[in-house]
Length: 110
Image (cartoon, rainbow, N blue to C red; front, side):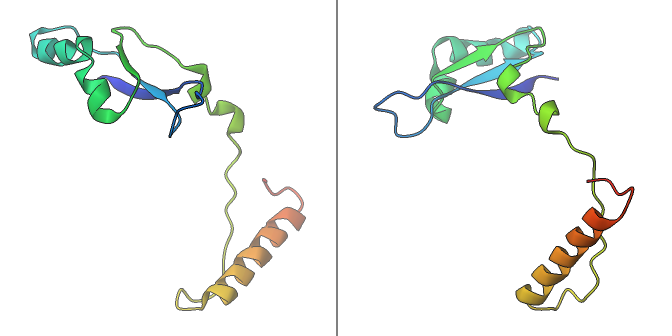
C-alpha cells in the first residue's frame, strides 16, 4: 500500500507558507495508476494540494526529516482522581499533582 510523506522544503523570502513536497512511496506501477501518474507528471496534483512537487517511488523512501524515533519516550501512565465534571482549574491541579507524584515515585518511568 502506498505511503504518503511530507518533505519540508527551505522557505523562500516570498513564501506565504512553508513550501513542501509530497512524497508517495511503495506505489505500485500498474494500469490502475496510469491516470494518477499522468496527473503527477503534469504537476496537476501538486497544484491541487499546494505542494511544490509530488515525488512517486515504487521503492520505500525514508525521509530523515520525518524520523521521529529520536523523540520517542517511554509511556507515562498517570492516574487522575476526580470527576470529569470538575472545572478546568480543578482538573489542571489534579493533572499537575499526578505528574509530580509520577516524577517523585522511585522507579517510575518519565
